[in-house]
Length: 176
Image 1: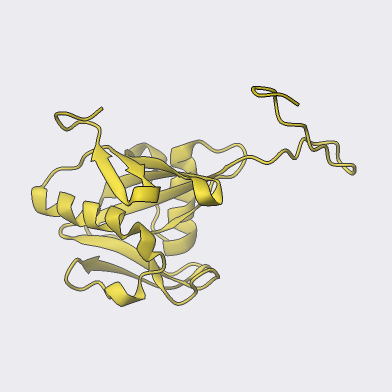
Image 2: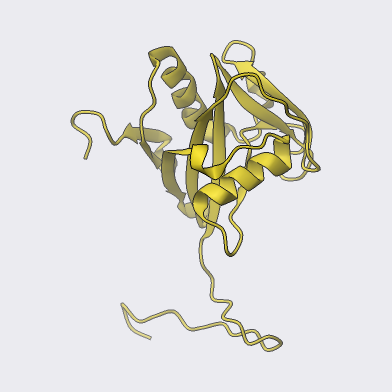
């Protein structure tokens, strides 16, 4: 093999499908209700018992927004039409080979219930959030961004640099 050559295919000997390593696509949904964000207490590993923004992996045959809406429904019982979701942030988590795409939605009074992958579902304002019980504190910069957007009264479109814990608003002046 040489530089620029395609990676060798990993063909399944049972079904014949190509199983070459590829990044997984993780979708999330930041749901805003006034000054609060929707959170779920995880029932499954990793980080069972800790709070997280509803998220999960895209499945074959889904659009990005459909995947985010499905994960939201499965984990929180909240049903939103994928057309209601707006792109919010994206980035790569290279150390675990994931592409991360987050959507946002704003809701009024809604009904929710924990799904099979959640122990509890709640809306938290920033000062109410149990910060010591966050499932993935390495991503707190994205949580802070969401609460900053609430205070500002506007939302950006963010490019995440996870390895640095940074976000840059792609609509802000001076963004590259």
